[in-house]
Length: 363
Image 1 (cartoon, one colour):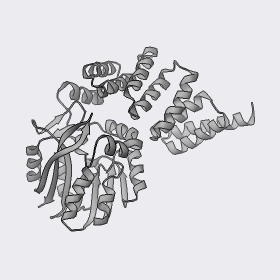
Image 2 (tube, one colour; image 1 turned 30 degrees about the vertical axis):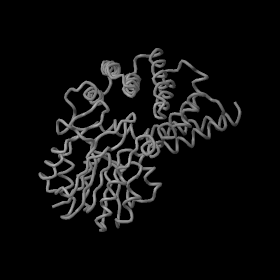
Image 3 (cartoon, one colour; image 1 turned 180 degrees about the vertical axis):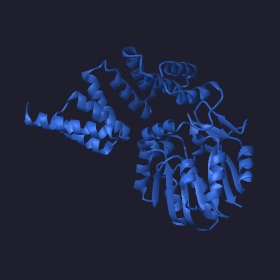
Image 4 (cartoon, helix red, strand yellow; image 1 turned 135 degrees about the vertical axis):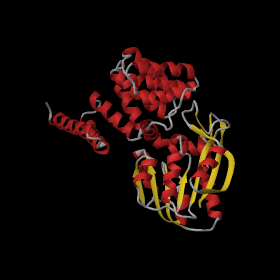
């Protein structure tokens, strides 16, 4: 064996150790060093591709995984990872083709059926997606996650909240393309709209809280009017993007309600732009915010509008809330409605999604 091969092997094993411990940036560096010493090595290509995929470096990941797939076209695991990268890049039909090729090799993993179901859902093939999710359930897939998917697609009894693992995985994979996709494809403008009305008040806040801050799109709009800013989000990759904007004094990875329950701080401005579509039932969030906000504090947010029940889970796997339901929660928890606007929150397949923009004041 050559010295280079031995060094490459050492770097590779180091990468595996880092990966198993969840230290993805260190794993990425180790696998990259191994690949530099052993170009084209199948195991290194695959592992480096998977790590870069998890880190949100989707284009780079896809190139590595395709190189690995060229060497071993029938590897179900690599086909699945390639499909995931393609899905994150919006190449849904190609992703579906890879998932189906993977299942033709090995139909046992429930994850592959879930990935296939998600691709079918994105393509508007809801009935086929539901069958794929049921197949995943029969093969040992997570009943909480799959129950959520099926409730959205089939209109059954919906859980009160989206599973945390779903939201975290969705946005970890979405982080690299998030800002551009929202602005250019989805016509998303909620942070500017919320901030514009706040600015018209001509006041400053001592401590602003950005719930579900994502990549920090609200941060630049609010920074000049807040002495301190804290952002909270489930996705580590989204928080890394938010950190790069430099608008936040603190960024916390965690669930919105769990953060509010544990925090001892007071916030006189709370913003939640396009967040409650995944939180679902808002009773607990309103109750916790009421305890963390002083009289006169500002709370503004968006929701997708439900014309029917107070809370409904849609086939998009996003929750919608009714105006009457939000007004009931506000009154129940000591918030006055300062203003409300009906306007699209974003587009989906070029169709505007009706939304409600609320600006509340803590009474």
